[in-house]
Every structure is written in structure tokens, then in C-alpha cells.
Image 1 (tube, rainbow, N blue to C red):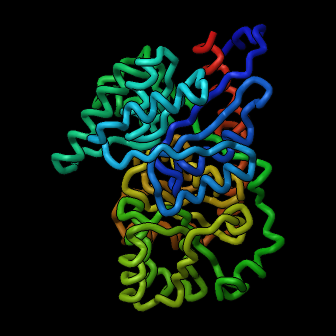
Image 2: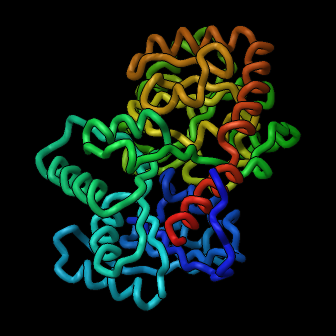
Length: 384
């Protein structure tokens, strides 16, 4: 992509409008993107519309000197919601809006059209077909705004772009793919602190450790890995499963672990901010998800030198090459999870080789510097 003209030397105010700042994937991505954006040319600020679990990502953004503002909008029917966003964009002298997630897309789309400023939206999730009437109406509304108020619409994977072309009728000329990136300086395969990290969670130093990092939602499929654990532990008694994250499905997963009979081998670590330090303590990263646009956590695991065992869904195959840097399996199949996990754990040397290849793939395809460069060029092209 050609570099647009920067001759005006203006510092452009980019407003990142997002529904909440909990520990979800879209929310966490704000941190590496805004840590690496060129502050000589861009003045980024984040506007959050709702409180999600206390908005912990807001604190992380403020640590890197990104202003975080709150414009509270409780539901899509809020009469004054649009006026609030228009006033906010005027007060901050916004030059461009980058919307993330549903509320931001709806209110941000109308507000930018009213004010005549460019707007970009990023699609972080795949559309789900089995929903109730209210959610289908929400999807229809969001899709209408994506089609008519944003140009371009960014998809985080080719699978996501194709899905929205079909479900939301977003034509090819309005859509593009920019892969999520991670900061490779934060994630390394260094296992120097493995023993002390495992000790924190009561895991023996000679254990084989499976790791999942995710917001604990039912669609992440972690319940199926828990169901696979009894057979895995029976074959390999030194296997432990470390689950890092929090969410509404946490209690159900903990109940599932208690029922499994191997609950002492399943550790719930809760939400953590030290993921880069924890990752290398594992031997295999597991993501038994049921749907996923492009899970950034897989890039983090690969950068940490971990081989991957993941569901063959959504954009996951754009990250994991079966038999090369991990294994891909059908979702919601605990028996297959068991057999493939044991097959992988029976060849630790092959696991290490997969981990090495995974690191190379991340460096080539999922580097935050590449993602930010593409975003900056896109912004400048729209602003010029």
C-alpha cells in the first residue's frame, strides 16, 4: 500500500469508539495498537459507551497516556445517545472515528455521517445464525449501518470478510482484511521462570501443562476440554489444565471441573494481566472454541513458543496449519480432544518443533507493527 501524503503535518485526532473495555479480544487489542501508533501524526483517544466488568482495559490504556472518556449509553433505544456522540466528537475535534463492536457501530455511524467525518469499523466476531428475535434485530440494525455508514469495513480474517459479505451484504469494494497483531517484544518462548510460575498455582514442576486463556463464555468451548480431562489424566497422571480468564460461564465451568473427578488437575487462575509471563510455562495451548473470527490469543501463544490444539472454526485455520504449528479438530467433540491431545503429548519433541514454527508464523503474519502500519495508511488515505 502506498504511503499517503503527509505534507500537511497535521496531528489527526482519531477517536476509537468501543462498547466496553473489559478483557475481551477487541478490547485488549486497543493496548498494542495504541502503544504503537505514530503519535507524531495521530492523536488517539478512546471513548467507551458502557461499563463492562469495571472496564479494566481503560486503566491499561491510561498507563500508556491514552485519554479514555466515557459517554454512557445503556441501550440502542436511548433517545439522547446520538446527540451525546455528536457532542463528544465535536468537543474532541475528531478527524476520524474507528468503531469497535455493536453500539459503537450504530451510534458512531450516524454521528459521523451527520458531522461529515470519515468512519471505519472493525469486525471482530463472526455472525451467529442461531439467535433469538431481539438479537437478530440487533444484527440487522448493525449490518445496515455497516453497509451504509462506514467505508471501509475491516475484517480481522478472510473468513470474517466472507461471512459478512454473505450475511450483511457488505460488498467487496467496501471491505478489507487486516490481521490482528501482537507486540512480539512482550511474548517470548523463554521458560526460565516456569518452575516459580507453576508453584504459584500449585502445579508440580515436572507437570505437563495445558493452557487456555479466554473470556469464560459458553462459546469458548472450555467445557469440552474439561470433559476430556479425565481420560487424559488417566493416561498421563502428570497433566494439569490451567484456565486463565473470567466471565459469566466461570461457575458452570468450575462445577464441570468438580464433576469430572479430576478437579485437582484443573486450575482456574481468574483474570490476569501477566499473560506474557504465564504463557511460556505451558506445554500446549488449547482453544476448543465453537466460533472465532481471529483469536489474538493464539498469536500470543504461538509467539510464546506453544504448539496449538484448536477447533477448526472461523479464522482459526488462517493461524494454525494442521500438523505444522498445531492440530485442528472439529468443535464440541471431547473424545477427539482427548485422542488428539494424547497423540500430541506423546511426542514432546514434535511439540517443540510445532512451537518453533508457530513463532515464525507470528513474526510473518501477526506482528503488531504490520497491523498498525496498515491502519495508519488507511487513516491517512481517508483523511487526505
